[in-house]
Length: 232
Image (cartoon, rainbow, N blue to C red; front, side, top):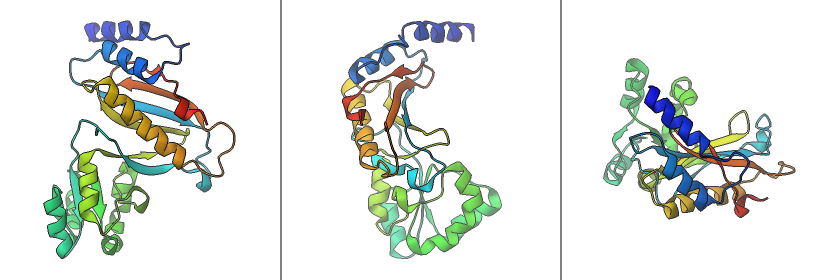
């Protein structure tokens, strides 16, 4: 633990907290100082000028990153009839209806990272609200996980689709790749997320929308980022 602590402390010293780095510079520094021996996840934190307590200032949705996140997520699809085969052929890891609902209710099974449901299944899946809701696993139309086009939904998740949601402090946290990614890929993934957040800016949000952006690796320090696309 002592060695790890020293690596992290050394990484912190190399980041100038008074500087707003250009995205490419930020990622170059991040890759240089990432302290862990494993391929760390690169994460972004975006502080928005919204008040999440108001329904008309909620920021939530999903976006497919052009280069994915470097991780393939496990997908469960709640569906019946022809949609079962469609989901399986698209690459879903688990597919079912009432049987899967019962498995989660009775066994506490949560062996998946993303849940997708057809609209006709939501009356049944709704029974899992107390279990899936707090874990961010409940299918939701706003994130494209309640749809009859299950093939597209599954393929998008497998291709690198991520969900974003502003927290109580007005911050969005999202994974945008791995330290092993090239600087170019990390920049493009970040720009895609930022452009998406610009498009979904709530009309009720007043004043400066982007309050601050920082990127970090799983074990590394935050690096403040300046981007013209986030100047609104």
